[in-house]
Amino acid sequence: MHKKTKAIINTTTFVILITLLIISTFLFHFQSLLYDIDFYDNEYEKNGIYIKFDKLETWKNTFALWDYMKSNTDTINTDFFSEKDKLHMIDVRNLINKTILTYYVTGTIFILLAIIYCKIYGIQKLSKILIYTGSSIILLLVLAAILSPIFQHLFILFHKIFFTNDLWLLNPNIDNLINLYPQQFFKDFTTSIIIHSSICALLYLGIGLFLTKHLNHNKSKNKGWLSEMSLL
Image (cartoon, rainbow, N blue to C red; front, side, top):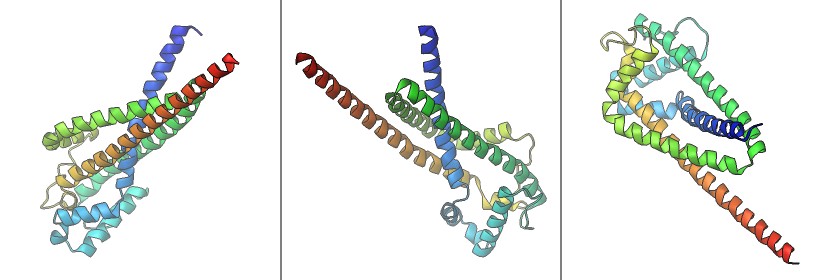
């Protein structure tokens, strides 16, 4: 294979691996938080949901919603939510299922491709992938922090892009879905993903730098040993 072609394949694969790991990192924290009881409890407390609704009622309907999200049933098994709520949740469930599928696909492809890539180019490439991924995530999170003041506009834009109807435009006087999950809930959800992804980014950087230092140290030792052997 031509040297230039090899270089192009190497660089392309390197970029793909970084991209896959970035996506997998964010989606891992998304699916981990999706049904986190402690997170929801804190949000319900913070946003005054337990004042609007009884705590038992809140959790009864939360679990009914989660059961619907995790199953293939036709409707949410509760009258707490309006018909518009239920119709909107069909779209939400489809979107979440696609998102979780994307997480598993990207994660699997990353692991398989990383193993092949490291076997061909060496373990030192893994350290570079981790360093570049960690740095890229941090840059993305800095951008997210800059854009946080316009979260409401981004929230609306997200719905316009990913939903083909206006069912997401809910009325708090009629639709309890928006009462359970006000915009602040989604802002906190996003913030939590950002915080956990930041920790992962720092871990990637730390492991990558450690591997680089360790490999360079071993390389120097081997060179020194070979030099001593050549003098004998």
